[in-house]
Length: 439
Ligand code: SF4
Ligand code: SF3
Image (cartoon, helix red, strand yellow):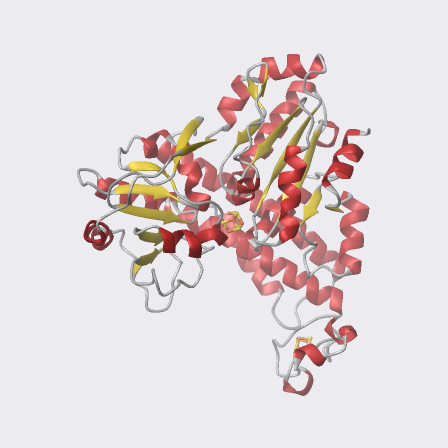
C-alpha cells in the first residue's frame, strides 16, 4: 500500500508508459531516464495549463479567443508526452511561457467580461436570505449567471451569488437585473453546510463544486464543464427547470442581512491615482498588499485573516478570488477617502490587479519590484498555479505563498523559485508584517 512506501521512493510519480516499474509507477528515476525534477516540472506545466484552460474555456464561451493561447496549450501538452522533453532548464522556461499565456488568457477573459457586462464599479452587496423562492449560483461563469438572470426577470425568483460569483454584483450589466438579490454563504468549501441550510435551488457553474449531500442532491444542477453523478447538467442555458423547482420549493425566510463590498475595477482605482500619489508621497500610505488566492479549510489559512487584521492603518489591501472570505467582513476603514480594502473580483481578475500595479509603476516612475507592493498568495487548486507563474513571468519578486508549498515542487524546484524570485512560505503573520515593513 502507498502508505507503506518509504518516503524516498516518492521522489516522483509517473505511470504514463508501459515501461513503468512493475506495471505500477515510477517513484524514482524512470527507465526512460526521466529524473524526479523533470517529472515534477512536467506536472507543474500540466497543472498550470489546466488553470489556463479554465480561463480559456470561460473566455471562449463569451466569444473571445486567442490563437496564441491555444497554440501554447497544444505545445505544452505535447511536451509532457513520453520521451519528448528531458531538459530541466527548458521545462522551467516552459513554466514561464505558461505564465505568459496565463497573463494573455486572463486579459482575454477580463476584456470579454468588461465588453459583455461593463467595467465593475464598487457596490455594497446584501449578504443573507430575503423572503421568496431562491436560486443560489456558485462558480465562476458569469455568462451562465446572466442567462439565468434574464430568465428570472418577471418571476418571483430571487438569485443569490455564492463564493466566486460574488464579484458579479460589481458589473453594471449584471446588477441591472432586479432578480439579482444578494450573496449567500462564503468560500467554496462552506457549500455543503450552506446548500443544506437554505431551501433553494443551486446552480454550480464551474470548478469548486463538491459532491452533494443527500439533503440537497435533488435540487442542485450544473452547467458548463461542471458535472456531478445523477445531477442534471444544463448545457443550453435553458434554466426553466430550476426556476420551476425554486417556486415549488416554496422559498426562503428572511433573515438578518449584513453587507460586503466588491467591484473595484481598474478604472475606479486609477481614478484615485492623483490622491494615491499624494498619500504615498506624504507617507500616509506606506505600502500596498495584494492578499488573495484560494481559500481552503486548512487551519493554516487563518494566517490570511491575522495578516490583514494586523496590518497597520497606513497600508492598503487589494484582494481577489475566494481567499478574500477570510477577511472581507473586516472594516478596515479608509485613508482620506481611499478604502483600505479593495475587492477586485475573481481569481482571473489577478490581471486587473497586475494592471493597477503597472499603472502605479508609471505613476511613480519605477519598476514593478520597486513599487511598495507585497503579494501574499493563498493557493488551493491548479488555477492558482497559472496565476503564480503569470506573476513569475512578469518578474514579480518577494511574494509570500501558503498555506503550504505546492507538493509537486521538490527541493530543486523550490531552490530555483527562491533564488530567482525570493518566493517565501508564509510564517507568523505579525513577524511577516514586521519583516516586510522593515520594522
Ligand atoms: Fe517511468 Fe519514464 Fe514511463 Fe514515466 S515515462 S512511466 S518515468 S519509464
Ligand atoms: Fe476559489 Fe476554487 Fe481558487 Fe477562483 S473558487 S479561487 S478555490
